[in-house]
Image: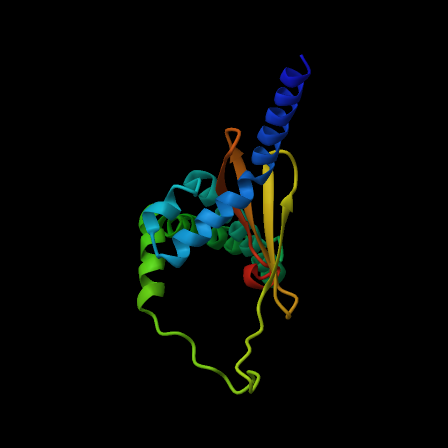
Length: 180
């Protein structure tokens, strides 16, 4: 009886540990797909409808804030311009956040030249690396934050799909990039 209890305990711990480690494995697969410039493998780890919705809402909010700050809330022409810009923004995001958009981004990065070393780089050739922090933000949400030295922050948000599956479903755009 003790052997069955011990085996069941070990099995439960192994299942819990693998479920806990599953987003880290998903990140490893995404990183590998990016390094190999494999758009198909990358696309399997992206929830495109959720990602489109997330990016659209953030960019529309940033655009609304900038229009309101520039013209005020009482301007009817600004509201018309915002609705037209919102429709155009939606089509741009739909084109960019799609499997074809992922392929285009990967292909562009494959042929684009690497940035030249600038005069501000250290003389010993060492480059400043971006720091990352990854962790759970809930039972079904996993966030990877990147911080650079300039105070800009961004994040990738993975949502649980099943027990062990995770997909990229959101990007927290850095305030400096979003114009906030």
